[in-house]
Image (cartoon, rainbow, N blue to C red):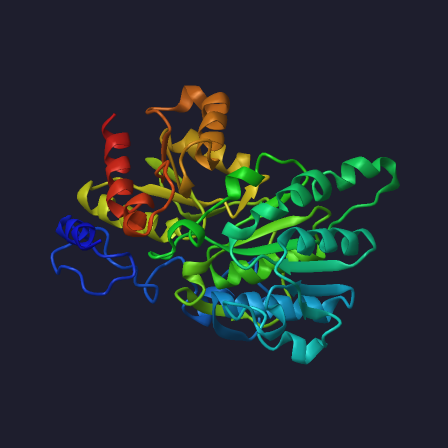
Length: 386
């Protein structure tokens, strides 16, 4: 063991994305300063200028887990048929997303379950079939696999199987913290969204920010006619902080958002990697004068907004898809294939995929597995020079 430790420490090291002690001359792979990113609403004025939010609403400064909590509380208030349950949910959950809800709404609507994921999802299917709106929490996305059969064979087929009866399990939402944090290793770092995108009948949503988390969660619970898998990037729970409207609002599921307009390259991403993309774009636009790079947040991974993506790539002629989950058979493959099928004659370079490496995420290697600023910057450079 001592020899292994000495060998690991002899390897070249670089800091995690959350490490504060970094070289003063480093340009890429520095920690994201969430207080300065343009992807968050730092002031009430920017919220007021965004038409998708209720105008004139008061706002509260919330991080992502607090926004999820606010969304859950709003859903429980709006519809008495809403339930919230899962492992440790009754006293707040591992990440405190359900904190205070049992005290406010009682143990009949917010409650703990045994440690049995297939039972949690199975009970949610039954409740939704009887008209309830169950919001269940899988403690980590890595733990969802015991419930795979319930998700893919039962919930996803429910509306199809019911046919003309019109019965569905809309309002059923499976929340799960996903993605890496720098030290999650094999069982606390997975991003399984692409697996579920292969299954018709579910919608798959990944919010990037507190405002998006609240609005998309409420739309999932109160508006969707299909069950929703709601993956929350857990590294953003406390890192991403912004002004969030206090009033009720929803955001459309299935609609991408153009975060930054551009004319030369389109970068498509979702969740935590968007912030890394933003940093890489800033470096690239500084190094390549005149280049303008468009950044798009998919928000909904399935069904995804093909029109917004195709319109952008027609304009720029170049596309890069970035995601944290493994690159093989991933979201990037689906987006890239659709781009070449629909707008091939507009392309000036091959569509590029930048994703997690095709390997399990060992503790010592997590920082190398997940796409970083250097890999995205290099992708931009190679695409421009093609």
